[in-house]
Length: 339
Ligand code: GTP
Ligand code: IMP
Ligand code: MG
Image (tube, rainbow, N blue to C red; front, side):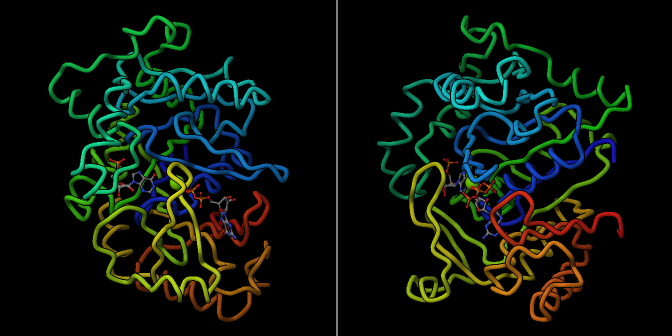
């Protein structure tokens, strides 16, 4: 598959970061490009016992030979960008990162508004990262672009041209989505959504890939979906139940406690269809069945875990190609060869 996109199928935080990190290390794509909204997203990845979280750069940074790109559709917060260059210096990101010169900029005023506005912060429960206000200014055509910021100059590039050139040369291109289908401005639980579409088509557009240039779409689901911020969550369980089942989680960007629910097969089917999923990735299988922890061979999974995977394939109608069974990169079952 010369180009593939990884997107979240639920309300974000499905563990896309850990799936992308595995793909980056295993498939060794030459180019890794990030689409999505901006610094509202946090992807965390566990490498050699150390946890890294990225909000701006591609999670594929773990693969040290890849060109790392941030697509034109993504909002750039220069403060976060420079912080991450420093934070990830062991991975030589400075030498291989490029941001599209057309990315719109998140200004301090955008963050201020996102944190104080009673509708955005109070009612919707935004991340406070300034993304909504920055996208609003972009639509009003008054936002600054990356090319207007002198400090970003060394990193500017035409990401759309780069990803298309890479495909023309037969290289492998991995495209990272952020957030999740339920948070899409178009298809999600409006108005409790983010400030852009988050489906695979939007992610392709963010990095400048036309629909005919995408070979595979990997949609990531976690065994117990979570949601942060307000909005409908039909299969939500009580906080006490989440505690009893050992499912308590906190947000990467805001530190807020995540709401937890039961796997919603009908929602997952709809999400997979609109995303045009060709492969599903299931994370946190060890939270569904403790005996699945760390298993790397499908045949060695306990019966309960296997039945859950079979039920997902049957009800969602797309094959499962990747299964995460624990936090480390190696805690994965890769079935893509059989698809
Ligand atoms: P995305 O926003 O989708 O990238 O997810 P996230 O990174 O925000 O999710 P979170 O902050 O919850 O981070 C995921 C954490 O869970 C990381 O530390 C992963 O290593 C870990 N993780 C990923 N997959 C699994 C899994 O299958 N089982 C367990 N127990 N942990 C996992
Ligand atoms: P905003 O994107 O910061 O405007 O927030 C809008 C909604 O999307 C809020 O409910 C946020 O909690 C949610 N949201 C945005 N990005 C993420 C993410 O990466 N993970 C989970 N929820 C997110
Ligand atoms: Mg996240």
